[in-house]
Image 1 (cartoon, rainbow, N blue to C red):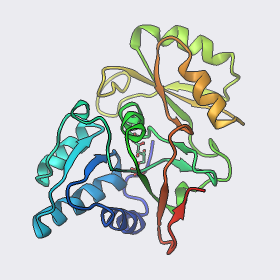
Image 2 (image 1 turned 90 degrees about the vertical axis):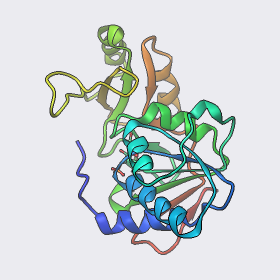
Image 3 (image 1 turned 180 degrees about the vertical axis):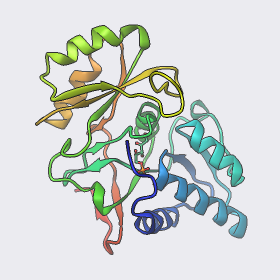
Image 4 (image 1 turned 120 degrees about the vertical axis):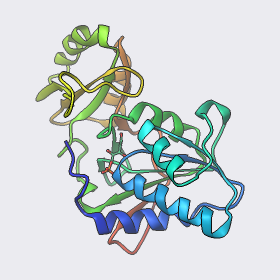
Length: 232
Ligand code: 5RP
């Protein structure tokens, strides 16, 4: 679905800059994906070099394994009632800081963690910037398996251009999320991010969708661009 090796230098630059925002005693949320994976590694290096004291939570098993590898202290999300900072990537970002996320099928925990964070830093490369959300990427929707048919039927009413159950690469059948659910990738032609985000989540059986317009990033760091974009 996405090319993890692409734009490595830009991802590295964005990830490295984001980690500089982490200070002693902070509670930190760590997202998921190839850009965040670099940030996790860089954070591990800072902990080792500077003895940085922080408490973290993660949004996927992938990020948990990486955090463990780099000796980053990880606590369950429910240990925290708020976070100082979260670092996470995105599949698309528009000029209003609306995002599409979920290329790694981790958007449910990501949205929870973003909603708990006083500051959310989104780290991307140039290819993630779009004029209109949905330009390149479908909207990932996490669905309870028993509800898949009825959810598909309800989504048909919203006139999608395309809708597919995300299929696994090294397993027969669908991708199963960390929470044991399926993912529908749904391409919409034109949509209002906030309206569609709310509408999709009102369908019984939908756990969470990958439009992030209610909890937007405060900062967007783009590898290759000097200036950091601040939310107005
Ligand atoms: C995972 C995500 C990722 O943050 C998003 O897919 C971007 O990943 P990458 O940094 O690998 O391009 O939303 O669910």
